[in-house]
Image (cartoon, rainbow over all chains, first blue to last red; front, side):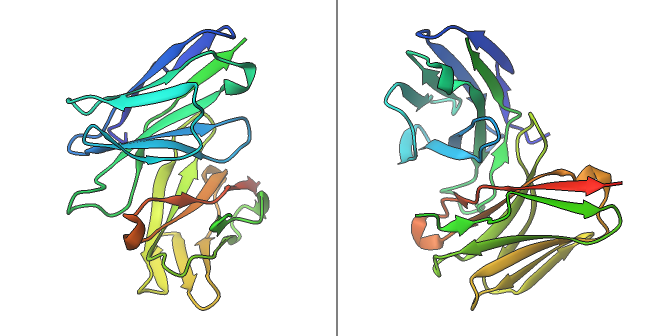
Length: 116
Length: 113
């Protein structure tokens, strides 16, 4: 158990719709990351938040947005969904920005999004 | 520009033999390297890491070797077990990039009985 919690585990929706994925980081971690893994693809970094502020941006589409709330949980919003958005979305947390940081990321179990 | 490359998409190894997964990098500023293991439909889990000031780190059946002059690292698994079948990701970070992880594309390891 990594300590990172993601909900929902599975989500099926239609094209054009909007969904929200939620992540609670490991206790004590201030940094949250979102990754996308499409079928048989590697991990694509989407975005990182640190203590409520966006810290780094990867290959995140404009249709996607994220935020980190004061209680440090994060949400990834995916809108105007397309078939190609079907993927596993992982949240990770780390001690990045803190003295105890070792660079290690702790991943949740992922949210599997299917767009029909 | 791929700074971290795993050139073998897949690797098949006999159970009990040694599995060697390779990773090459281009950024000489990387000072920390990590290996993650990922089963299907699960999140990646940390396996082993190595600092750039070392050339070897061992943890049970897993050993990571770092060759800085060649900008190459490898993960050795001895002996390979069926439960080792997974995708292995190599990742690297640098202090001057605030330790943001740069990921390789992964290598799928298949352990044959």
